[in-house]
Length: 328
Image 1 (tube, rainbow, N blue to C red):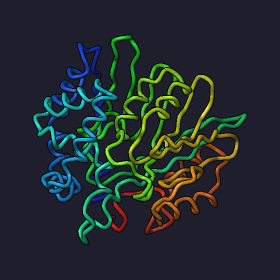
Image 2 (image 1 turned 180 degrees about the vertical axis):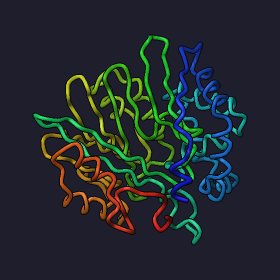
Image 3 (image 1 turned 120 degrees about the horizontal axis):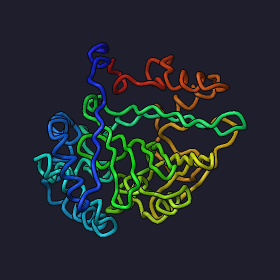
Image 4 (image 1 turned 45 degrees about the horizontal axis):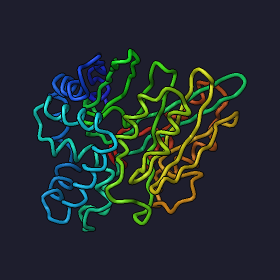
């Protein structure tokens, strides 16, 4: 199985824009990657077994309506892009809405034995440093194994002539992983798990905030976009200013809580847990294990950073995943 994954086709890059409007951009992306989007949705067990059944219940209606209303009001253009992606690919709009808001919906699913561990799909790691001799932001994107073959790169040119590149999960807004733009701003993302009491139902979705970052004109602009986002769940952003050689780790939670840590000469490792924002979070053995492993590995050179992100020493929770825990 490992070799078949390694032989997966090369990541496709789709150049799009400038477009007449946001809907057209989404439509063209959906049309171009219709097969990947259809395939991803049909194989996404979280969508099929949890989100879609929940969306048919009465108790889900207010939550989903709030998410739609609040995100459409704050980001009308990105909302049009999302609808365009769904309609361009010919899949149900509801399916695309649900996968884009999965992090904002899953905490509110009724607690049953079938979904006590609702989403073990985010196991990405970052190691960052800005010293006199090197500035590095290294990221591994370890997501649900079902996403293999269901990701692509979007290179979009906007009406003002600027452009961005976003690594994109099929059917989702670019980018819930990493991206960069012609303003010299780049970012990578780490999912974090606030406890249920820390989550604001119906707030802004993380996919919308990160889509907004792709259009940030500077690291300060990116920070203000994050701070004004009124996020529902929480996230960790690694903001990289390539022009001014600056990296910030920004941890967020609902009710506009933000903590900013500037990365310096001491290498900074981030998995999927809060490190400096004081918040009640779900205990994540996977992230704790990766954090502890990262502290003992050498972090002197670029090669050290890359081998750290490729480390598979821990059989249960390796820094470099080849699928969900327990799946080889």
